[in-house]
Amino acid sequence: MKITGVKTTLFRTASEQRDRNARGSAGTSPSHGCVIELGTDAGFVGVAISSVAAPAQFKQITDELLTGEDPRCVTGLWQRMVSASYRGGPGGFVKGAIAALDVALWDLKAKANQEPLWKTLGGARPRVNAYVSGLDAQATDAALQVAVSALARKFGFRGGKLAVGLDPDADLRRLGIIRQALLANTAEPELMIDAGQYDSPKQAIRKVREIEKHVDLTWVEAPVRCWDFLGLKRVSSSIRSAVCAGESMDAASDFLPHFHCHALDVVQVDAASVGITGALQIADTAFGFELPVTLSRSPGNMHAHLGAVMPYCMSMEVVDPVLLGGVFTGDVRIEGGWAVAGDRPGHGLVIDQQALAKASGTDAAAGRVA
Image 1 (tube, one colour):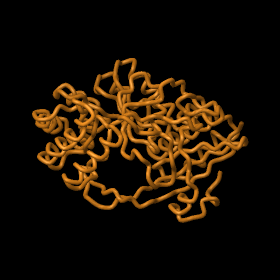
Image 2 (cartoon, helix red, strand yellow):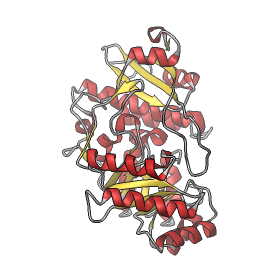
Image 3 (cartoon, helix red, strand yellow):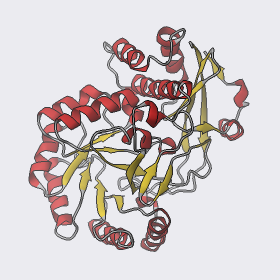
Image 4 (cartoon, helix red, strand yellow):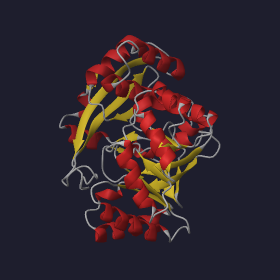
């Protein structure tokens, strides 16, 4: 089996969810990205959903490094792509393109094996503890109470995360609402906050300490800039809660100073930033430092396949447990507070070509093919 080329399709779909990130303003938020379809001469197609809207990058990398190669040699091909980008640095569009192509390669390998990705990766128990996120999108306290109560009742969530920062009183009040709703499923709800990498270490310490007077936090995500490993260490040493970061780091090597300085208590991993291969390497390194891993949001909650094989994966972020609308479907189920990976060959994402054609404003069958 050989790789024959890549097809990329940009899409944009309207979202009814309001963008109420703690550092942003309210408003209608569109969903946009790029569908990657990596073709082979055996008829299998590897799929990835990327936020990197850079078709030229996907085509160049595929033409120069992947076309004609066996997609089942995933780790070697990932290393080839990373090595080729070394001098220019693995950040920006190149980083995102390599990560997405790596996801598509793993999807191809699992499909060629006629088995789900979690099994190709070596997993035996395809489920991960899930927590609900995106709760800051609820504009009012009443809407938040209705939404989180319904999610807890239907999907069994035992943990929730809230973006915080603009109004300390509102943050405490809304954390209380989330905790009350989750008490239906557990006597000890996991409450996390996302500070958005906004504050200085001193500001972060002061704000978190005030919250800790009233709320028992499982972790504080991104209290300072993700690259400020000394600042993260300072915050970790000054608060009771665990410090979590890593979602926006561009490469596995970016985590090294954080590991050496013991700057993180929980390592956050995102295949959209480092690929599946990089994510597995980071998880293994974290295990060597006796640190737990948490997985960020992912298209179709695909990260459930990865969590099934990571040695110390404590949780996975879920924003959309039902996957209504959009340009793809997935077979990861959220039930009883767990993200359960399905048995569909590959990572389970299937492109709805009609929806993609509508969202891209073109005939999807006439997409760009390398």
